[in-house]
Structures are given as C-alpha cells and as structure tokens.
Length: 443
Image (cartoon, one colour):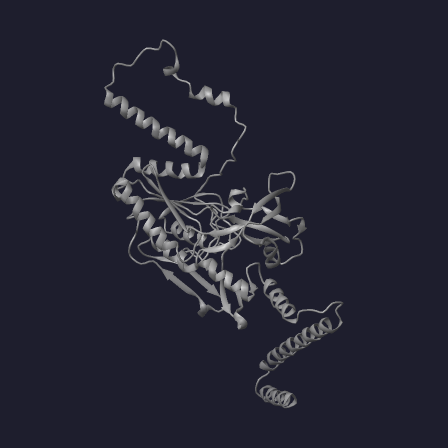
C-alpha cells in the first residue's frame, strides 16, 4: 500500500511539472518535508524501543510516552504543557476556586521556577513569598533542569505537611530558606471593603466566581456608603493577580465599560481571530476608577488593566505588569488527560500586544519595603504637639460641634496616614480619587 501511494504521488507530480515550471519545486519541497517528518517519527519509535528493551531498569511505558509528549509541548513556550488525568482534574477544580497546595502561581525562567504571584491569604503569602522570587530548591533538592510540571510536583504534598523552599530574591545578597505548611487553598475571588468614601475591590484571581462576586461586593459597598453619589470613585486592585479565565476578564472589563472593544485574540490563521466588545451598562455609573497593578499582575489581569487604560476609563497605578499576552486552550485527550496549548496572542483595544512587555502604569508608584527598625524616638517626636505641653493655653474660640468636626477630620487624616504605612500604593490610589472628587465634575 505504501509503495502504491508513493507511485501515485510521483505520477501526480509529473503531471504538474508538464503544465507549470513553478509548482514543481514547491511540491517537491513539501514532499521532502513530509518525508522528513516520517523519518523523525521513525527515529522516535526506534529510540522508544531501545529505551524499553535496553535501559538499565524496567520502564513504565505510559509514563515514558507522557514525558515525551510533555517535552514536545514545553519546548514550544513556558505555558504549553501536557496534563495527566490527575493534573487535568486538579485544573478543573482550581477554576472552581478550591485546590490544594502552597498558593503560588509559577512559571519557568532560566531553568528555575519563578513566582508570578502569591495568592492572598495562602500559606505562601503568609510566609512572605513575593512576586518575582526564584525558587531554586525544594527540601534541598535542586530544581535546575526539571520541567515546570516536575518542579510543581515536588512542591505538592499532603495538607499539613511542611516544605522548605530556597528563594533567590532581587536585592538580597544570599539565597534563603522559607518553611511553608501546605494547606487546602480556598480562593476568594473578590474581596471588597470601604476605605473612607472609596470602595476598594480586590480581585485575586479570575475563576467562575469572579464577576458574580465583584458585582455583589461592589453593590454592597456602594449601598453601605450611602449610594453612588456618596462615593468618590473605585479602586480596582489587581496586584499579584496571576490571571485565569479569559471569559471572566472580559466580564470584569465590561462591568465598567459602556461600549467599545475589550480585547481581541489573533491566532495562527487570520480567520481564527476574535474580538470581544462591551455591552451597555457601567457598575460604577461613570465614577472615576484607579486600577492597581504590579509585577505579579498577569494574563487576565492585564486584559482588564489594558482595556480600561486604552478606553481612558481608569488611571492605572503601580508598576509594570508581568507581560503574559498569550491565550492557552485546554484540549481534552484520551484517558481523561488534556493538553494546554498556546493558540493565540491577545491585544488591547488600541491594538498593542503586551507579550513580554506588560502593561505600563499611567503613574509609576513603587511599594516601599517596610522598615521594621524604625526609630521609635523619631516617631514619638512626630506625634508630640502643643496639646501635650504642660500649662498650654486652652482654645475657647470654637464650639463643641466645631471641635468634634476637627477631631473627626483629624481621625480621617490619621487613618489615611496609617494606610500609607500599610499599603502605600493603595493610599496613593485613594488620594488620586480624593483629588478628582475635590475638583468636581468637568464641564
């Protein structure tokens, strides 16, 4: 059968050559390319057979083939990979918002595991792991040379068990060890709170819960503030958000846009591209928005920040985002496994790709590191005032209501100062909204 096929192909090629002088070389090149592919597949089969029959120990054939498949996918880019049946099941659980582990989103760079971001409230977050950290060892075992999946497998383990990871961090002279107790990770996709007159919406991940939680939480905070007219704007906090579902990123962007493109995706073929547009309706009803991002904001977070920035719907504050501008499609395979394949790049409404570049904030604001050894004497000196002096003159020119108002204003100012100590970037964002509110609506 094989010989018949080749003969028929040769006859077809001969007929084409008789009619055109251009197609012949092209078809010959294509035929040679196909032949080369089959030769490479034959080579793979030969190597597989030799490993199976001659390797020093008996091998698990299924695992060997899975490793070959994973190697093929991971050679493409850091985000394409093979998912075993167990990994595929774990991924489906993760998109629903609950899974086991340390609570970090990771990628691979220069052979080491790099932290994209720790997830709020997880063991890794509480242990002080930061976006941009490199994990070089797990329980003393080097990760250099391992695939990302293999490295992640080393970090997995029973809930309640201890793991020691070795971290290399920019600004630190030496690697250091961090001990973490594994736990079940329950993701709260959105947390909301009222900071003065500003609803703060903290989005930690983009899973099935994200948009419903955001809508419910924001509406609750607006009601608690006394209605939409009582707030001065909204802070959308996407820092250390590693991304997630594209559909949820689109819904969150649409929540604050009345019209226009949100994001477009472009694949290998032009006809495979898609555009996603906003529908009428703005949960913030036109109130100003500040979006917070940092180096741990990736993928879906960058879609939201880029869309709101391009439409001039929000001021983006913080530091440059991670720069993951690609779309992965999860394709089910036999035996309940799956493969995660990069199938497209996404583009912001203005047509820019943020792949490897990230979203640049409109206002760059670094988060200063806390200084635990602050001089207490200096702090005490800053808090002393005339009121603390013995024999001071009293102020009898103000009524009790005026004094009470001054004290309330002072408490608000002190609360803002405390926030600057706890979270400088968030305080900066709220100050922007206060400034816009003070200016009033533009004509």
